[in-house]
Image (tube, rainbow, N blue to C red; front, side):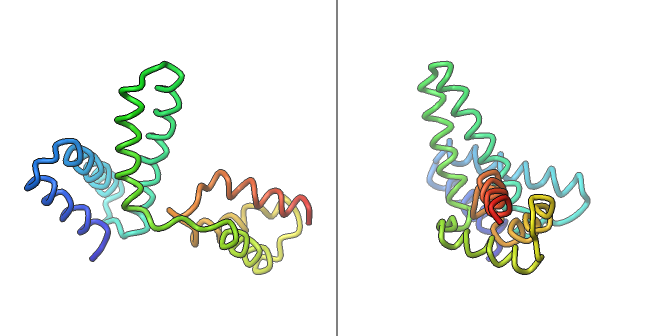
Length: 149
C-alpha cells in the first residue's frame, strides 16, 4: 500500500469513527498533496508525499514555537497533536549512529575534502534520509565533519 493509499484509508476510518480533528488534518494533508500534483502536473510517489509531510511537520514546529512565545497553550496543544499525527506517516527516524554512518559513506563516495564539497554530500544524504532526519541538523553534522576533515 502506498502512503497516499494509507492516508485515504485513514481518512475513511476517521470518518466512520467520527474523529473530526483527525479527519480535518488528513483532509488538509490530502489537499497539500493534491495541490502539489496539480501544480507540477504529476502523481506524487511516496518520497514526494514524504516531502509534503515534512513541510507540514516543519510548519507545525514553527507554529508551536510562536504560540509558546505568545502564551497560547490551547493552540500549542492543538499543533502538538497535529504534529504527532503527521509524524505517524513519516518513516522511523534515523539514530545518530545510522546518520553518522550515512554521512561517512557519502563523504567517501563523493571524495569530499572540504566544506566546499558539502552540496555533493548533502545531495546523497538527503536522498537516503528523506523523512527520517532533520535536514538542518544533518547539514550541521556534515559541515562539522568536513570542517574537521
